[in-house]
Length: 207
Image (cartoon, rainbow, N blue to C red; front, side):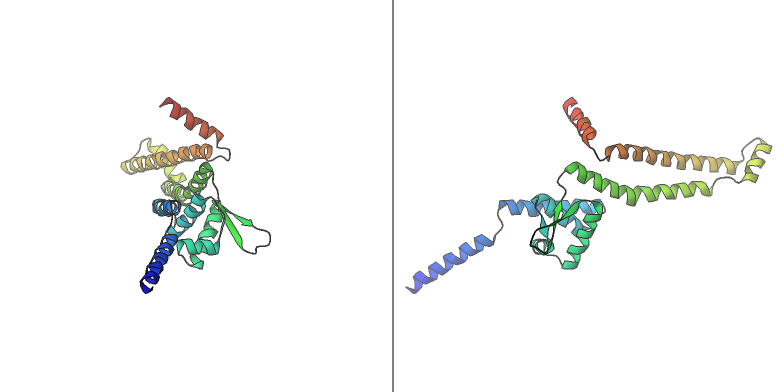
């Protein structure tokens, strides 16, 4: 009798353990969260913020802060900070449910819009400050009115002036490059991505 009870208890424990183990879908989702967070690091996105976004995106469902905290094993402070950042980036939006005081968060599911939001933030944080710095560097070597008059009087460039001219040309080339990238980005990041999708499909067909 005791042996039968022990066997039944062991079987119950094994069944309970199996029920607590994640299924193939949850395991795949957890793996996606890990991969996406590592990629976020290379994009300059805080890891926890990338993990929260990955969870909301890959599940395709709205989650409240408590659910996010439990699933990712993060603190309330980290969850709140990450959600605030994702809202500012336009990667998630709030949802309210009737009769529920909790706030729920749903990730943007259109991958083109996700890419556009990330690219806009990277441009704002990385490219725009760099271009401003380059322009200041360029202005710091611009000749004064007296120097321009002296240059015209001599009718030739001395070694220092020639070096400055080469320096300014290099800076101008860089600024011009980033301005071209910005012009392309505006076309790529336009709200209606239909033309970008069409171009991508044409390239895929051509290949």
